[in-house]
Image (tube, rainbow, N blue to C red; front, top):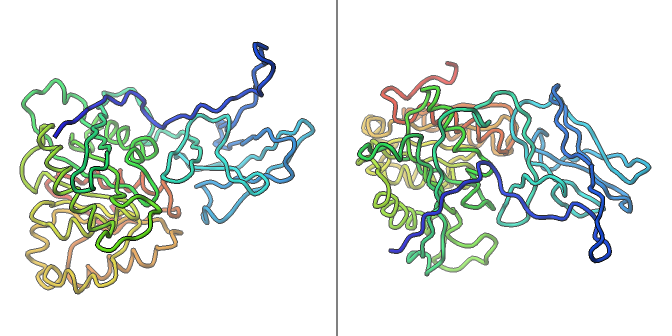
Length: 387
């Protein structure tokens, strides 16, 4: 299998090249647009601005809202045709947001920090507060992009993002445990780096000695193209399971110094990726000893499919070193996620249930990754959520 590994030198999110000044005569110099958006103030209030003099209505929606994305906040237009609104103060985090202008949803035209998705894009704003997902002056790992042609997926070209921890390139013989980190529906392979800041989270936790140095593998969870009509025999979760086990794992282990054995292999994911984590992780305890499920509950028929595991909690608990289940308190699926943990507990299957403020949003999933990463590959990972 031919592979191409390309260093990812952009830490953070991708930018799009939208023009920031109006088009004019050929060769004519245009004055720069000095509009600022978003403007983050020291008190953690944030002002959003949009130049749209001909618009009749403009709103903003963002992940700081408890009922995101259904709620919207109206912007006010001034005499120069600039719409604006100030929100907050906001809890330190990175928030996705977008504008709706006369019924059309768009990203912020003058903010180059963009969240790419399978369909549409949005903008991102960092409200700093010294959190684990912020850039710090610590040793940094490297994120490489591996391209390959997938036999399992009928020859589709795929990207796999691989994070190696600080010092990986200098330690020629050291082998590392590996975390397979899965994104949610409508996302792309780069989601956990460009938006989730997984590389920065691991850099900072490793520097603080709160996490074990590990390799993190992030790939496209849409084995069936997002939005494509369903075809017989092409269930996305089942096809992705084959892709991960038959192609991604062997490819990573052939090209990176991965420590051998299930005790050195973890899988975690958010939403759709959380469901894939449950299916793949619990379905292959011979391969995975550590699991993190973010904002996802069990699928219909779970107790029948995994009856052997539920009926033998002693063996299951011996094999499963960590089953972390995290969710936001205002997530629409909150009750289902909590019931999943309670069902496991009723069957005496050990799990760490953890909840935080927030909905079905990235601010929750970054916190979940922090909580999971500090437990992975530790000698005594199962800790009470009240710790």
